[in-house]
Image (cartoon, rainbow, N blue to C red; front, side, top):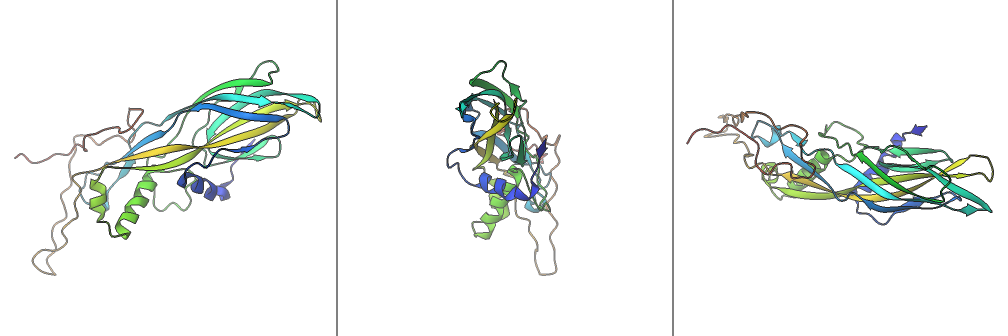
Length: 274
């Protein structure tokens, strides 16, 4: 059984905001190591504004790249403990901050995708694994959300926008017009099982290796965004709001390309004939 520890969301947030400082491991007595020989890195995600309005206050930031596919290979290595041999039985990988709970359970915080469980036939001491799965990226962000368990690309861009304005670097329109890339990371956890019969026949013990995978968030600047003119002529004369930009079709919330930028052209908007 897998439990989700909602109160530990801060752990995931801290992990996603800082670069990797080396792998973190938690191995039982019967496990020698979980070796990650390769993984998909870095993850690339594209965010753009799909709003039909040129007003920065009416922006609609969305992830427009396809969900990344994660591939992980390596070995589960069990060992002799107290004179009794342990054997590798299975393995699984996930994008989540995982903490072991007793011998046969885990807490996984902010799970954003997990592989199938690969089992190992026979009684291998060391077994190779090859896992793949989809990393499910949130496509939008609600600022009213109190707790965000998963890394949210739109939230990260919005946070950078807020910092940009607060630091006096320019207006929201200045930020939204500029193409940029932001770097963060997400935790990759690989969980392995070793069977060890010293205390109980057939008993399996779990171990975990956690590694931070770099994430690059590409924000595609919107050249049409402009600060609205609030007044003209006098204090009581309010200018009309900027006209909405009609589009032939809105950009989909999910792109079809595996690596960003999903598109290099600006959003399609109808423009007057010149």
